[in-house]
Image 1 (cartoon, rainbow, N blue to C red):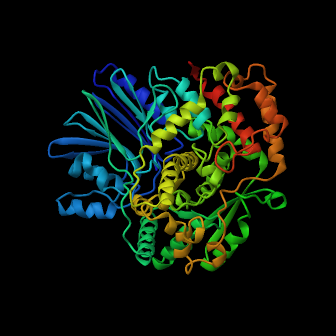
Image 2 (tube, rainbow, N blue to C red):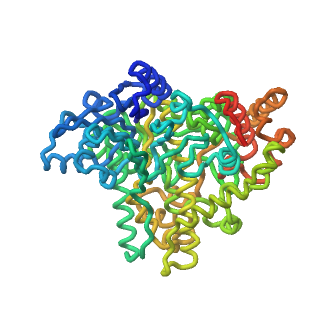
Image 3 (cartoon, rainbow, N blue to C red):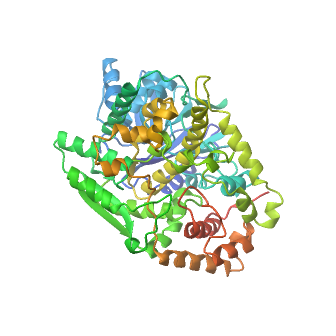
Length: 617
């Protein structure tokens, strides 16, 4: 995986040496995404650069990659992995193309030359890439089906500036952090999720998942190339099970290709156990070394664990059960309270925004430790969104809330705003607009049962909002450590097939991920197949609460703390006094309860200090 940056320079307002300096400054902000190599391509009208994390073809995959074909020149900067590289290469070779190496970068560039803009309809992978077509004097940029790989951009003075992360855009002249009403509404109404396409900062946009854009002297054109389509599911039950299993097997095995050490994340839950089982079988079948598996836990968590509806049991016994069955080499990474709190700032910088507090920082630190032994890891993310695994698929209060079910506490979010800002911003109005705007995109069928219709809606919301937040977390925390994280459950072919399976089948026996459990009943230990969904583990150590409470208290004792410019000081003090229990529901999802809410507020203050955004409302 890598980082990409670039900008057009059609009017040649930026002189070559200045352009090189700007490009280098932008590229250097992404050094953690690509610690192994960097490169640049600068011509009269275009400047693109690349930071590389070497995964495939160390010598043949250097970027930016240039190809001259039939008198034209093409240049690519690319972040991601194309999983159907072998099939694409065969097609291209049959059409007369020659290859110098075996990198997916070369295959992607020559696929673009062959297919043109339609190349996106031939790709299976995770990607964000930009290709300069010198003959047309045109820049083509595309993003994968679910937006696993990030891409932000800004149009300034009729020039396009793009980057993998927002921080790189701030290195371009006259692009600076600025927040307006919409940005504040996104941060505190929607956040840490965000509306697809919105970059939070004024003037910065996100290329939506499954979209490409073309920029030339006439301006910018953006087009959606794929979306979930609703259609009648005609397969019988046995065919449905066989098809899901075939698609899942293919997705996992396609993503096990790597020229560098590879491992899996294993929590002992259904999703990560499926990934690990297939990966372990693949290693044995191909005479590869024993599979390494990794899990995260926290110092003294076994002494302090508290059973909840969302987290009914700990992971360790299930991990041991599976590793013994599969014969993998398991590693448990233990994180302690101080480092978890100290990692909050790095996690915020990785996102460029306040995020999921220690839910982020724990993954960041986990990846840092895994990176010592591996460069690529495969994980079970996205199964819950696609197969119906979250509690809100089944809770009546969530289903009837008429808002995003992972952040129902809208009134408390509104009241948390600084009183002066609260007078000018109506979070509920903004959230309602985004919620209804999104629901209007859901295609319902006359043949759907009422339950399937309702579950289509909540599944669509979950996949296009909640899943995007977790995918952003996965990319940023992994890439901050130069660790590539792959998500086979996010394969678009699997997702579009499961999308049309009736809810009664998907939630077989009334269980979350009931169909997936049934398919795996003869493959995995029964204890794991029947295990109730348990989210990413968080610390139960009371010293963590004390630590973040102390950090937030120190912030509030500072009269110049910038957080009070945005948020209500009295509310924050009440949160401190009640250990976060004054908020009756988690801030976001299932895990952001009292300690995580305080950690999140610490991140807000860190973000205001680090990025110092101009606030215009």
